[in-house]
Every structure is written in structure tokens, then in C-alpha cells.
Image 1 (cartoon, rainbow, N blue to C red):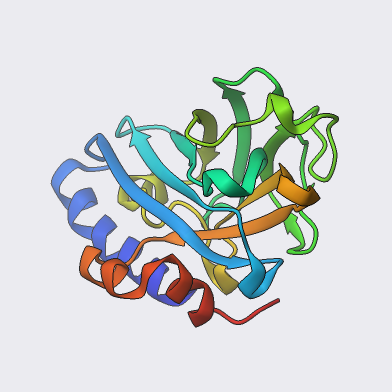
Image 2: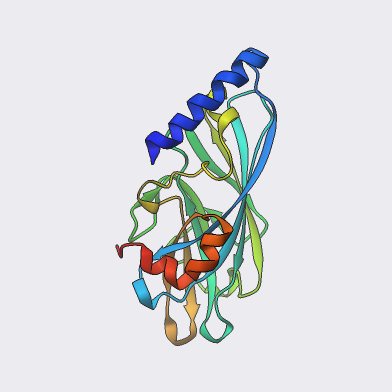
Length: 217
């Protein structure tokens, strides 16, 4: 998957560089990321929708990434989103968390130890604590949303060819992970997110089908 991603980047950067010298056209793209695996396997209850927006000015070595995250867990199951962690494209030289519209989410530092899925480069959680952070009630409730803002850095060639669909590293399905706590009966969950396939494929698979299509970790 990495090789394919970099092939797209290299191919896309050649005509851009030829047309504008060392400059790249400004770009803003969006992509949906959906649940694609869980620490709880078929017993997963945490569900979310995510709209990722990638914005690059066309010059320089940094770009902006925003993650609009909504808790769509079934109301009967309860539960709050209490953390988000992300991994950048492997060609990037850095990724840092800047802010969240929910002030209770604090930078976790780097790396983010997002057990059981290993380390992620950047993220935020209640109290800056991926696994804990106090009461989950300050998190993102069912039906509510929050926007997480990041800065990604890399070469102008990389950033000029990147899109919202490939800004995060999907090697081993570890583009992003969402932490849930405070569910009815005390359940918690850690749910991976991947760039959504074509709309027709999503309709055929459904969330349950997507979970089943991924191997349990």
C-alpha cells in the first residue's frame, strides 16, 4: 500500500513541477474515514463518522489537516469518544496536534501509546491520557462532534501531491484510532478508522461487514 501511495505522489508531482517550477497549486480535499477494526472484534460497539480535510497552500513544508469526528454509537449502548490518535503518510517528516473544539481534549505527546494497536505519531485525549483521563462525560457524546486540528510537515513535492484520502498512513489499517469509554454496562472500545471505499462498496458492506472483513488484532 505504501508503494502504491508513493507511486501516486511521484507521478502527480512531475507534471506539477513542470508546470510551475518549484511551486505547487494550492489544494483542499476531503475524505471520509470509517470504522475498519476494533479491539473488541465482533463485539465492538463504538461507531463514528469522520470527515478529514487536507489543505495545502501550494508552497512551504507544512499543511493543515482537520478531523471532524462524530460519535454515531447506538443510543442504547451509550458511550463517549475520549481519544483520537493518527499516523501520517510514511513520507511525512512530522505530524503534531494543534487544537480541538472540545477543550477537554489535550495533546497526548508523541508517540501516543494507543493500546492495543501500538504507537501513533499524534493525538489527543481527555486529560491527555489515552487509556484514562478521568470521567468520560467530558468526551464526545452520542450525536455530538468535535474538530481536531493537526499540522503535517514534509517536502513540497509530497504535500503538493497529497490528498485527504492518503494523508494518514493506512499500512496495517493504522491510519487513525478512536477511543470509546463510559458505555452502558461499563464497555469500552478502541476502533480503527480507514479511508472509506467507494460509496457503493460501503452500502454493500455496512459497518458490520467492514469489521468482519478485517482481521482481529
